[in-house]
Amino acid sequence: MFRSLSRVILLLAFLAPGAQPAFAQTLPFGNLGAVAEPFQWSATVEPALGVSAGQAAKIIVTARIQPDHFIYKHMTSFEPEFQPGLDFGSPLFPKAESIEDPFTGKPKEIYRGEQRFEIPFAISSQAEASTRELSLTVGYQGCSSKVCFLPRTETLLIPLRIESSLSSPVEPTEAIAAVSPQDGDAEGAFAEVLARGTFWAFLFVFVGGILTSFTPCVYPLIPITISLFGAREATSRLKAFFLSSFYVLGIATMYSILGVIAAATGAVFGQYLASGWLLAGVAAVFVILGASMLGLFEIRLPAGVQQRLSRAGGKGVLGAYTMGLFGGLIAAPCTGPALGAVLAYVTTTRDVWLGFWLLFVFALGLGLLFLVLGTFSSLIGRLPKSGAWMDAVKSVFAILLFFFALYFLRGAVPLLERLWSYSPTLFAQAGVLTVGGLLLGAVHKRFADPSPRVRWAKGLGLLLATFGLFIGVGSLTAQRGDLPQPSWIFSESEGLEAARAQGKPVLIDFYADWCAACVELDHRTYSDSRVLERLEDFVSIKLDFTQDTAESRQLAEKYAIVGLPTIVIYDSEGTVRPEKRITGFIDADSFLKRLKDL
Image (cartoon, rainbow, N blue to C red; front, side, top):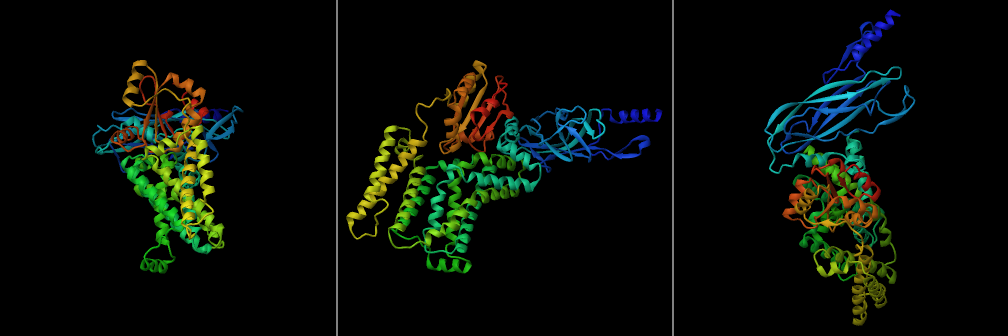
């Protein structure tokens, strides 16, 4: 009995709280001999080569838990020692395993094996270049299948290299908001997956690209894809697949370049599409493609170029790749929420190559839909070339292409913007225009007809049908004028001043007209009666990022905005609450949960 008691005393002495080195090896257990430390902790700073003043980084804490052992999630904590110029965010915990506690019989969340925890932090832009040591206290309680040890703490010492400030520093609180994962947000999901390894990160962004391909901004690419590969001369399935692959490769190339530029410059992804000149160029390409579909002319490369492309492996490779580059521009507006996590991660690691390939793989997922469409739409090209059937198919595609030309022009042409609005009268007029256009011959008549009267009827019918479709879709999708909304303030400075005067928390919504998820927020979340009632306790600010301006760039840098919609929350004391930050669409129930405790 005395021997058993002495072993218990030795065990308790070993488990007493105290500071341990970052890389524990083995510790003696008295008469039990040398037994491997069951819980080993280590920590590093990421990026490892150094962090510039004014930028964000993270501490990566790794727990290595011996087999047949585990630690409790609710007993695990991280306390970084305060240092001037450093601002730490909330730790990110990996997904825990739920079990029935063998000692209490109650359900508990635990960790086994090797686990990775992240603690975001930011360095003040005023910090001087230096090398210092971070001190992190880890608290935990571990158990085996037979015994539960006393709670312990370990102090990990982590080297940190601070480099000179960058030219465009980010405020520490906002830098943390950019890299701090939030429950239910894309950033949190991506960071959690990334903790499992690079393979899972690439798989995650690939699946995210597939899901993004079903968002509204991608719809214009569908008729383009079919018109490129389906309404041409008879094409074999293999050749259609080959051309479609280059089309998708063009999308991926453009996407990767744009994403890296956005991450490097701080530009909001998709904001460049607000340029009037670019919108006009996009619309012009749609009109040219539509006219070509109608047989008014044929888009052909010079004979010499075609011969070189044929020797390179297929006629039209360059055209397919070029149209893919163009398609990447069209699809960009809907990708901000999905890519927010990737871009934020790229900005914190400054690993341009990793960022490029993550975005490239995301774009491949986005392009998978078009690879399928391009391959099997070649069946359309195998239909009989003569007769009204094929001409009708081409006319329908042409109307869709003309519709998207008007859709992209509406941001630059006030008249089109006014037509894109909710109105029962406009909706009725849209029906009359569409039906009238079809009756005149928008679909069933041909420009090849020798009669000038038929050709004029065809042209007028196409014009009426296109505008009818545009006005009708606008009436169905545009925000209703009587839709209830919060009492928005459209100036950041005025809103923050009002919040200080009233002692209220602040909600800042960053939106753009080209952002489909922003419109969905207005329709489904902000108009909810419960949300409206809750926001009466807030000062609600709405900031327009439709146009790329000096003010929007300054706000994007200040709040680390990489995609829209983004919602930033201040508490009533004027402190940014990064754990409340929202990126992407969120429904009313989740939105209300996020505003709790404010």
